Length: 151
Image 1 (cartoon, helix red, strand yellow):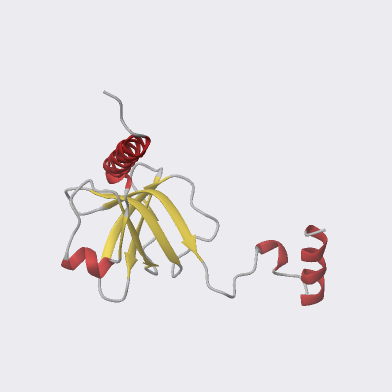
Image 2 (cartoon, one colour):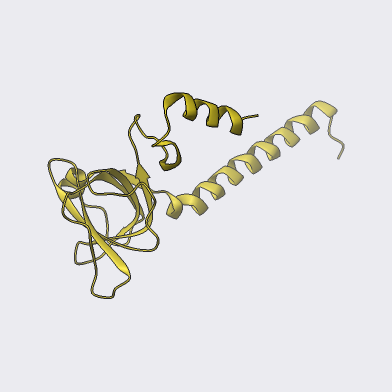
């Protein structure tokens, strides 16, 4: 049976369309467990995520909450948003900008006990952030140092 060129093109287009849809669905199915939803403590309190689900928790580090766990390696602190608080445990090197009262985004999951175990911490800073190296320089010196690094 011989197909006309018009029918061959239509059949090829149909096969390509089905393959494309299949590839997109397969990619979405494969990445479904990699999605991290963003929560603030008030959302966690009102509609908690499933235990073990990867999420991002954002808020401010509560003043006076930063401490070391009994194991001597893990860091314990509390994230708040003014409405609710969430205890967080992190094992690793803290970012330079991580201090009490600063913003933080923690990636991880909740334990059955309700503690958030962070795998990654991202410290946030405000628009007035100045790197430590430039803190003690005058504005002219800082501008010259920045200009020197961009040459």
